[in-house]
Image (tube, rainbow, N blue to C red; front, side, top):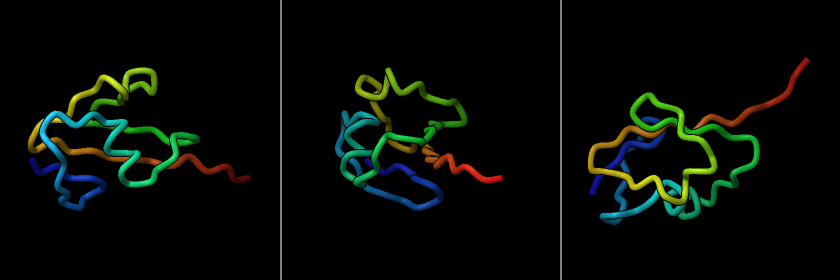
Length: 66
């Protein structure tokens, strides 16, 4: 199946979870927020959040400043 991650088309296996996708992209969960189809997905649900063909995923890294 195809999903879009931060504007880039990517292949993902059918039945993949959000956590599996992030692991496959070597993205560590600290200090990030993830949105699927314009809805923020809580970290506690990433392992059970099954992706679907055409999903649009945005990964945002929190950075401090001042």
